[in-house]
Image (cartoon, rainbow, N blue to C red):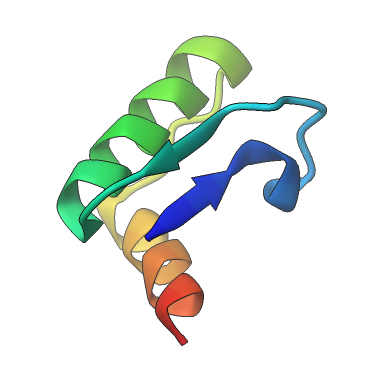
Length: 53
């Protein structure tokens, strides 16, 4: 699984790959630290669910 910040409207080249929980944790941490946006676990789960379909 892969998540890219740019896919979510950010002018950012951050990309994370791995398994679901790992990707969710890393993307959530990056979003909070770099973009100041804290996603709930539910919101991160929805992002992952959309990526897996």
